[in-house]
Image (cartoon, rainbow, N blue to C red; front, side, top):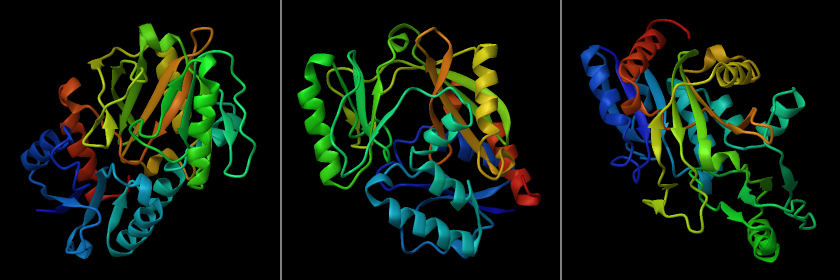
Length: 291
């Protein structure tokens, strides 16, 4: 029997739909496990052989504390995904790095806390902070609402946050996003996420926007992009227990990278038979040998 911590947030414990099937798959694999809250001071991380970060969806307003926690846990046990990946992936400036390495990334205009506010797009666009999750503090604007968007940016600047302004990709309206899920470095399955940035965004439990999710057969060109993204991970993708690559159709219909999720992404086990078992198998391998 092995002790595995499945790490969540207090508010997310009952909202994470991946936890029940993963727990069941670990039980079937005879892997002892416990669902724990990342910032619960009562948790003895040394009692676990492995801590698996899952739905720590409340980290955004306390990122420094979350990263300090990751460092502490790494000193007590093995953490997956690793602390260095969490530090890199929780700031969307990684998109800048990906773009410099030739990955097709959605066009992004960056505005720092002390920068003048400008909106360079004359079509629908999106404003969001570089440290964000679940579409919180994110909004879509029409080109005639640049003043409201500028106020949004100024609010983020007043909080010392780096802001991203991106064109809204109209291909999302029909095709939606494609999210490619990798487990143990191997492609597992994909889902379609419908557009969520409408006039108003309701956050479930104050943590994430409600999404329209369906299973999707990934196109070869999307899979090729997703696998290419994994090759750009600092330190190599072999250190990842899981990853999700979110893509959308670009201006000419070609896929572009929206986000690379290696911190706390939903993996949508309900939409792919056997995927929770594949995750349990990857966890079991991680317990017995390096990924």
